[in-house]
Length: 149
Image 1: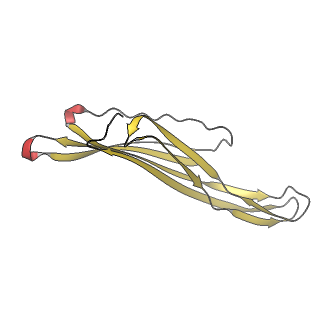
Image 2: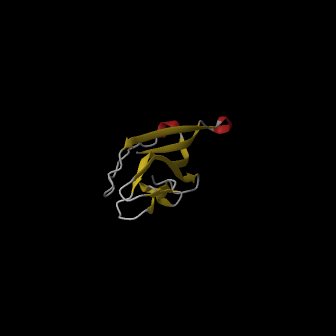
Image 3: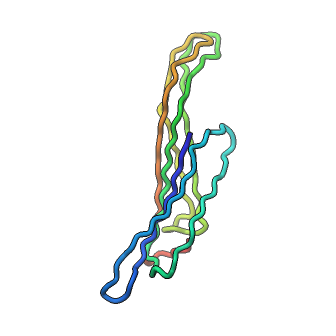
């Protein structure tokens, strides 16, 4: 199973003159959990509303991706001899922006579970192992950057 959370945080200067204050607006979307299909990736689209210019001037933008992967795996020896059987799950992910944030147009990463090894007789199944892994990535842009997103 995997769960991904994408968050956008926008900082805006609100007001004018010496009474200027910064506000942080957070928008988040998530999907999952979903079972791994062991085949080609299934793209997921998440959409966020644009920045409300009535709030003031956009002075910064941060995008973060957090992924959690978990589940179980069980090794089986399908051979004819006693063998060490090892397995782990690897999940590669990527996020593509519709524009540039801090000079980045995408984020990507790899989440890898613990490697489990069982010494098994022919045809034997190992114990059921619980796995978990997580990862994250960030992109930020501040005043003076080209906030094209």
